[in-house]
Amino acid sequence: MKVLLTGATGRIGRELIAARPDGITIESLLDPLDPQTPDTPWFRTDIADRDKTIMAITCSDPDVIIHCAALTDVDGCERDPDLARRINIDGTANVVDACAECDAMMVYFSTDYVFDGRTGPYEESDQPNPVSVYGRTKWEGEKVVNEWTDRHLILRISVPFGRRRTGTGHNFVSWLAEELSQGREVRIVDDQFTTPAYMDELVETLWHFIQKGVTGTIHYGTADRMSRAEMAYELCDVLGVDRSLVSTLKTADLGFDAERPLESGFVTERLHELLGRPPIRFRNALVTMMENGPIF
Image (cartoon, rainbow, N blue to C red; front, side):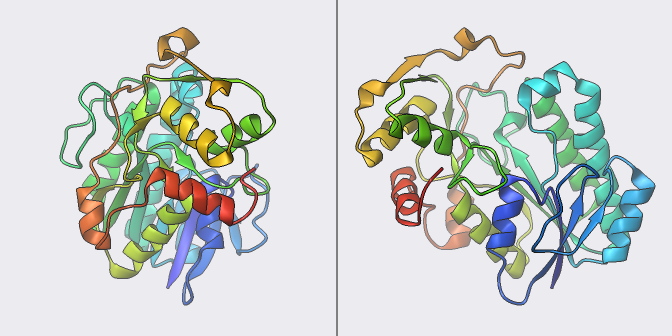
């Protein structure tokens, strides 16, 4: 099976390449400014350029396209909505058009930001109501995928975390681990609730779904719905540092450009049914991360 991966140099893209199962070959579709991916053959194009995107993808002729590329800077999207639309909606539409040309399966990463965060946790059947430009553009991207290809898997995730890989920036947990390990105090919001996504299990799950031909919309997250402050306290316990290093504040105190969904997170019953087991607990994921080497 041949897979074409957009956003290959991002956190999830690198994890997907590292966890590639036997029998799967990966080619990468890189932005013109992205560094080369040493472990995969690659093409370069701006996904917002329809003709070049379709040409690159049809040259690859993949069986599956995993579309990770997106503008995920939530406040950046709010400040530059045209750029957000260009990448997250127009770029996705171009990838979908190429997917149809190749008769490939489409995998699209989405987010809990498609919901307003007032009545979470959310099931797959709940109606999205995004409150930010980022959330709206990802929801519009979902609709493009749903309307133009039947063979698709939409995987919604929130707060992906795991060990920091060389060449990538910190994720929330790896940043926290570095700060707390150095004895530095952190201020963390206690009113944003989520079901964080453990990247090691996430990519293993996605490869399993692809090989089994699973389609539709699925919510992925750990078995725990918790606030970001609760995540920090759990990490303190696992690292063996004092919880007093963590102080709390409200999201409104941070003055973000974009509104955040506060009462968010996912109901993961469908994920449980498909895997035949519940997803990993957050604390167990932290312990596994520590056992597998440095977090940051």
